[in-house]
Length: 261
Ligand code: CIR
Image (cartoon, rainbow, N blue to C red; front, top):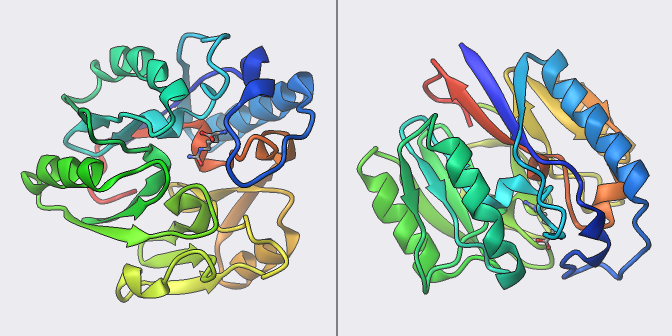
């Protein structure tokens, strides 16, 4: 089985990124780049081939490639991001993904951010957020119906995307901030709740049987380890000022896999 991670460098314009729930703080581009490079190195260590998308220096949020596409085993869906400033990011992503998956697109008036799509096996949950609308969710559902995925929309509150509120920590285990999304949305999946002092801690990136996880959530980290999970930390606090987490900075493409998120 091979695993690729598509990433994109931190653009200097990130200082003008979209912000929804956070006040603007000065972003140190050099520090963000250093942390992003360490993140890519960790992905390599975990067996990924890192493929850098072409740099797009004038697109402030373009390092957050997760929002531009959702990659399934059978198809890649190129999104139509909810923030108009982010829509030009998708062209270069589509150009790269067309070599690895058949492509489908979300069309106007639909909007969908990849950060709102959580896949666990054949279960797909899509956050109804400021970025993802009902039409976008319906389009995704129609595309995925052909492949037997069960798609359901989920309300999120108080955060940007569904994956700010919940991510898969293992095949049937969800890491969740219950203040931002209802746990019932994930059916029978076991839950690990974040430490309430770390509201942004529900964002973990699953690579094989390990988790890539931001180092600035030590309390929730302890909870993950206590549940027997293999956690690999990376400094990610600079991009967190742009409302980005560890899932946002890559698109993972697995080949030879069947049921992995
Ligand atoms: C935005 O507001 O679009 C960016 N500043 C942050 C996007 C983070 N992406 C994600 O959570 N998937």
